[in-house]
Amino acid sequence: MAIDRSTAVELRIDDVVVSTTNSHRVPLTLVARWFAQLAVMMRAGIPLMQTLTSMIETETHKRWRGVQESLASQLRGGVGFSAALSQHPKIFDPLTVKLIETGEQTGQLDTVLERIAISLEQRAALRAKLRQALVYPVCVFVVAVAISIFMLLYVVPQFATLFEANNATLPWLTMKLIDASHFIRENTLMLCVAITVATTVAWLTRVTWLEKILSRTPIARDIWLNAAIARWTSTMVMTLRAGLPFLQGLNLACDNAQHPRFKRHAQKWSYAIEDGASLREALRAAGIFAPWALQMMAMGQESGQLDSMLDRIGEFHLDKVNKAVAMLSTLLEPVVMIVIGVLVGTMLLAMYLPVFELSNAIG
Image (cartoon, rainbow, N blue to C red; front, side, top):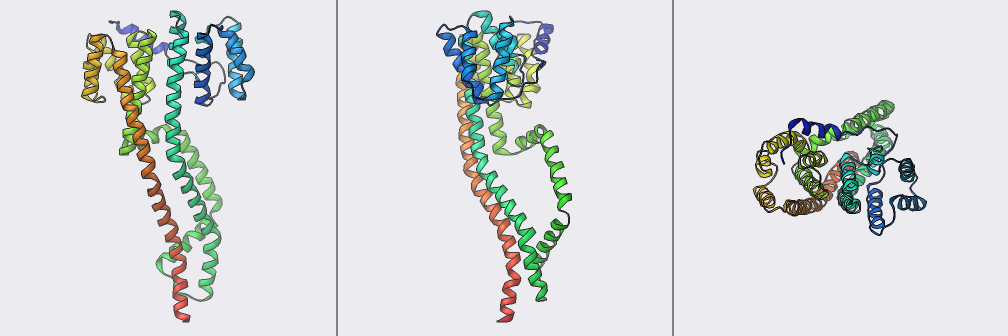
C-alpha cells in the first residue's frame, strides 16, 4: 500500500478537472436515474452508444438532453466515456469520473454505474428530506414578513391618522411602530436596494456563512458532520470495490465529504498511511470518528473486509442524519410559529392599545 509522496501529490492534481464547456447543473435525481438506466442496459448487453442514443430520444429535460447529446457526440468522435464526462464538471464530479475510468479499465463499468446511481439516489433523498424540513417554516416566515410589511405600509398609517385626529396619547410601543412605518414608506427605494445588495452578497458568500452557521448550531452541526461521515464512508466503499488505489480513494473521499475537517486532515492521513500507519491509527487523532467506528475499521482492514465495515459505519451515520432531520423538522415548526405569533401579536397590540384607551375615554 506504500506510495511515495510525489505520487500522492500527483493524484490530487489529477483530480482537478477543467471545464471546456458551458455545462450547467441539472437535477440530481435525473443524473441518478440516468446512471441507473445505463447500468441496467449495459448489464443486459446493450452497447453504451446505443443505450445513450435511446435515452436521448426519450429525454424531456432540455438542458439534460443537451448534455447527453454532447456526450454522444464525443463518444462518436472516439473520446472515452470518462473523458467525455469530465468535460461537464458541474454535473459529474471528479469522483464519478475516476470511478467510471476505473470501471472502463477493469471491465466492470455496469457495476460502477450501479454504485454511483445508488450513491446519488441516497444523496438526493437526503437533500429532499432537508428541504422538506425547511420549506414549511421558511414559507410561513416569508408570508409573515410579507403581512408585516403590508401592515406597516398600509394599515398602520390609517391607524396613525385616526390617532392624530383624536389627539390620542400614544403608548411607547405604538409610537415606535408608527415611526417604523414612516421610515419604511419614506425609504422604500433605499430599502429595496439594500435588500437586493444584501441578498446578492449573501448568495455570493453563502458557502462561508453557511459553514459558520452549521458549525455553531448544535443540531445542524451534528447533521452536517454525520452526513459528511456517511458520504466519506460510502465514497471509500465505492473506491475500494472499484479497485482504485487506496490513497487516491482516500483523497477523493475527503473531497466528497464536503466538510472542512475532512479537507483539513486529508493530507495528514495520506502521509500517515504512506508511512505505514493503519487506517485506524491515521484517523484517530482527528477526533472525527467514534472509537467503535475506528475499531470496526481496524477489524475490517485485518480481515480484508474494510469495505463491508465502512458500509455499516456509513449506514449508522446516515440513520442518525435521518433521525436528526426529522427532529429538526419537529422543532422548527413550533419555534417558527412562536416567532411569528410574537411578531404579528406585538404589531396588533401596538395598534389596538390606543383604540382601547380611546374607547375607555369615550365611555
